[in-house]
Image (cartoon, rainbow, N blue to C red; front, side, top):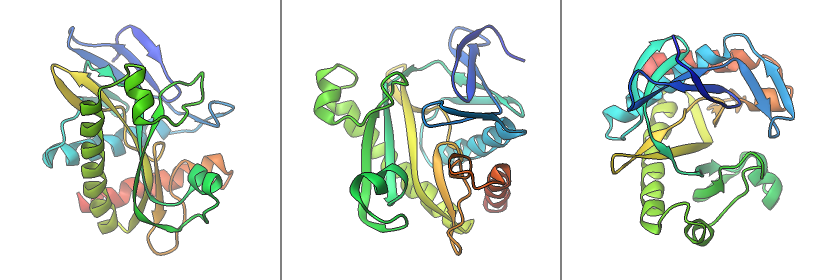
Length: 235
């Protein structure tokens, strides 16, 4: 059950909440890539992403990470705290892949000497360009203190999730996070799913995420289901 639609994104609907302090988010079956140039409806995608994300948010909450998730309504719908989204995506990279490999000429699968933290400006119109601390503070998107907090939280989330996925036989290659301001606190928002992460099988390096859609590898939802089933075994 959802209220009035306030915003429709590529993979989710944001709707009016049960009260003035909440939103309702509904996950869609739409898969997109290359800033929306490639688009397809994939059966059960919304359900799988919602369940994976809800499990991960629950795990992170138990381990001290503050999130916007309030409760689960049904297979594709959740209630979240109303937060002012900080227009910066935080990207964490443990292994070279995707655009990082192309940009810096590093073979995919190369283990990085240290974890990379990147910021991108959250703007579909501009293609989510990379942006640095000075740009962010100059534009008034966030303060330096907030950026430091985002880095600390993102690295802590990386440690927690890397350990969890390793137990599930999955390498956490890279992922992006979104955060929001709510009642004086910064909360983890949006989702954590195969749409926003790169997951590789720890033994075979088989891709289990949206790269299966981006690169026409086939069996996209099989990869998502495998991630979910493995997570359930370790949580």
